[in-house]
Image 1 (tube, rainbow, N blue to C red):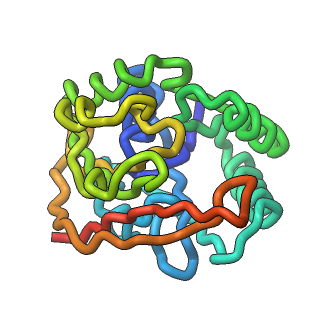
Image 2 (image 1 turned 180 degrees about the vertical axis):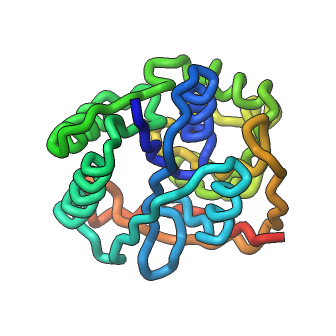
Length: 229
């Protein structure tokens, strides 16, 4: 099995990598999508330089895909299909993902990967989300919240370290792993890291986007910038 792991730099990707590694299925490389305009991780807003440092600390190469700012689903699907096809040509057999319980997303990924003649692997699929994030913490991984959906969490959660206090402070109805998009994170240290990343907390930036299914409603997102130390 030759695997490429879809990689956001966050805790769920990290737990997928940890699971694969512990089962002697460590991926050949990581795959990360970026905003081509800002050179930041899609949806997370983390600087490319920090992703490079993270991948180096994990001892894995990373393949980067840059998406235009106005990319629609057709463009995204075309870009990913070209990437998966190229991977298949190089002998890759599986694409790994850190999804936990979103069935629609899992089905979508399976369809896209299957079109390229590859198979999927979901190392943390169907895990209890609280147990998974508690295991992440207990293993010694360190992660900072870099993006918050303001319709579900307050701005104060941006920039926080994901620890037991963080979990206790989450409002009722918010998934402990942020599986419904409530928050995203960036991992800076842990058992698989050769060195801990030196990062500094920068500015928290507010952005507004149309609500899914209702372009007349806007949702506020808070992005916590992280700076290389």
